[in-house]
Image 1 (cartoon, rainbow, N blue to C red):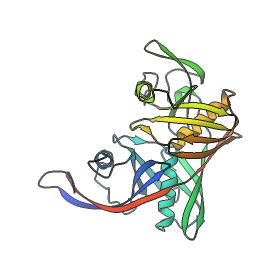
Image 2: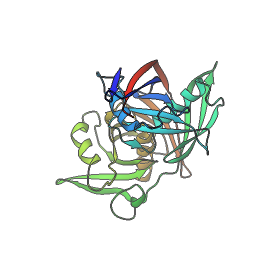
Image 3: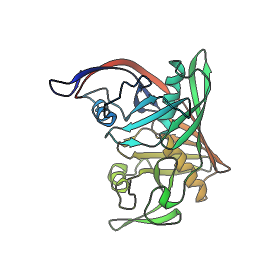
Image 4: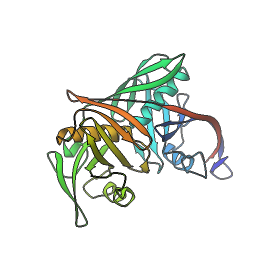
Length: 293
């Protein structure tokens, strides 16, 4: 039992699925009945996502009712902050909704803070095998990423305490800073990731991708996620890396992206990004919370 209150706290029982997209793992909870009404979900996410001390995850996903789509997805990082969009998370949430009969169709629309996203499910015998997501168009204007300054940031210099990195920055519903390196496996992601995430150029912080071009159709990427740290995979990060590679002439718009947890297929054509990959259920369970009203 997790304790979030004093003597007058009320008991809340939450049923959840533990899911992952290529090792990027989430606690998924059905909130269509309003179980989180009056509760700070960021605080709950921060506690439940603690590895070794609780369920443990990179983030928490809430399935909510929507007046404009089939469902609404809310995403909370492990530090309790709310994210606008998550590529691996939306695939997990789509599988959860289909297999729990919240949305019983193979094409669904999901409301996010980054807009309404369309997803297509490949199913076999009632089980979701893979999910394709229409990620929409990348946002390149600095002010809309957001990033300090005006215009676009494509292969520009970023000064990190005297060290210069060439970066391409964009939003695919959440902010990303892509840096191309020669050897991503040997790159000190844990050293530079948090420094770039919190660089003054990014008023809402940023996700950071370190990408190695293998050939025009393949990238190898490691991701430092805002509010989480390095993760095994990041769907929006994979999309951002392909867009950046194409904009800088390093690769085509159709790439297999090799992440530490597995591979994603990303297509960037006609200013539209499509991402395809798996979503897996690890287990399901129940957690009892004592919540201060």
